[in-house]
Length: 245
Image 1 (cartoon, rainbow, N blue to C red):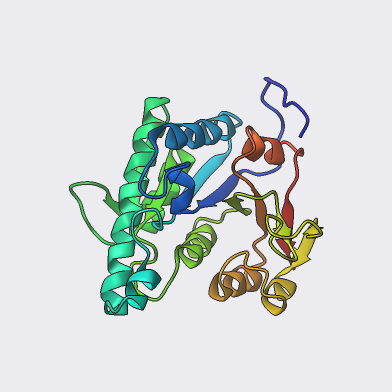
Image 2 (tube, one colour):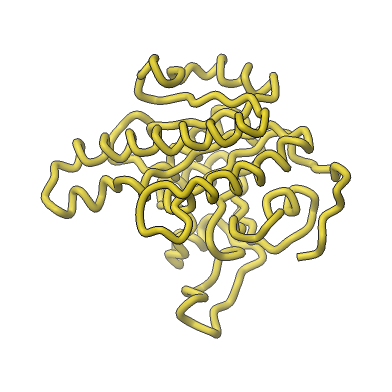
């Protein structure tokens, strides 16, 4: 990717959703939070915030607890999913701390009320935070079991009138097969929602893709490991895959 100017570039996006996995926060560790990695991602968010873009975030909880894995090991699925939702709150609080260390006002907004640590989800209040240029991190998924954080991100992106979902991953787009295992893997520049579903491309779960398709909400898949990648794409640079109608 070409170097990005230190001047604030022009972007056509006014408000976006950044969706990242919980695993993105654990760095090279096999579990938990890696504070330098959290700080690096916060700096990426800061660079986009400095462009004047209003930012929503949803962070998964798989670095701490994943409901499906707990269910597979014999735990009741509903209980396991609620534990996974609580893990996303822990990750959201860690990201809030990293962002506020960079002087960015941030609100953690939980679908499960826990007033001592974060705000309850009230749509109009969240919109107001965004209008005041605060970063809003939506935690605890949708507040319901059986729904992933992918679906939660798509739901909140629609409710907040985001113009796109930016899905930060470890690869620079959507491939027809795993590029880490197959040297001949082909990257798509663009792909439709229906192709993602029909070819099982694994961008997001089927519920999230269907919700994005029904509301014509584009999904930009890019590498979170590429320094300046998030900002670069908003400035019209970089490598990514766009999922659209």
